[in-house]
Length: 460
Image (cartoon, rainbow, N blue to C red; front, top):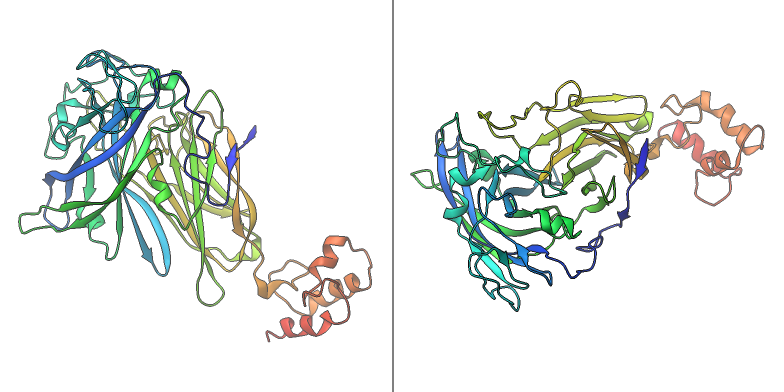
């Protein structure tokens, strides 16, 4: 069964689908601060580093937010992500380049850093309305306090008390931290973005889980001779908006496949004209807090669009560990057939640990085509349920040079002349045919279109 998306716009204003604040607890990110490198694995220039940054989260609601500590399973969890935006062959790409496990928060302070604070007791058991609590980059990098995202339902905020299980594995310099490859930090002219997402059950139960993500741009320099990168925050932290909105030239579509029972997915896209009549189509799918995840993505493409250079990018899942869900990082399979370009991972019944777009991650899909962008309906297939979700986007239409291809063989030649003349004479034709035969754009299919037809047939 296909379900429509709920909220969409050409460029959605931040928080366009966020419900108004209610008299309930409501956690939100206030600040991202002091990013730094924590550890390295591999040679300088071809290895992977650990990154962490400080955060301040606050209670944007009007009721105290319960805030325990391990092994209490009602404490907020925080993620850390990193993205890169750059230009490749004239087209913008916005890609996720790293992610951490979840940080188990503790001891909420009652600061007035972010809003007027009505404090609860210091270090809990709750964070008062308007009050904030900081966690340093070093605290957030503490490997023994980081737990797998796979145990967490991001929409309900529910997770087991045994979440933080480090038995059976040892830590290297980057285990569980935000992991970023040297290669991904060596992109000329790139813009880098840090993101944090808070998850907690009381916030979710109050219906306030759609404003829990914020981001901040950061400048990157290095590495030094010792292999250390430096990070410098730029501008202010953007509250209550995922990092995908830093890709401001894109169109963003907010998708709520199962309102009230699961979370949100955001689809972003941008089409760039290339040389020789080609167009580059760039798509990103960000799973904000949808527990079912995404396992396939399909875009309609007319048969004559000549899709080429198909590509896929996914943030790498962390290496397998004992006592943790271990997800594949295998690239998705690509298929161009039957008027669709489609990418997919293994189905959930065959491999529950397949490389799906799980919460807090973003994957990219791209291709070139001769067809210009036209309104189209893409399909997301939810990973765990197999449900198809329709999303209004754009896809490659018929190339301009093939407007006179009336018999659908992707060529304009004398074989199209009979169909063209029949349309002009009104023989066995419909209104849509008449519009298509209006080659000169006059609004009417008539004899003046004949010279245009001949020109296109001759390749003029």
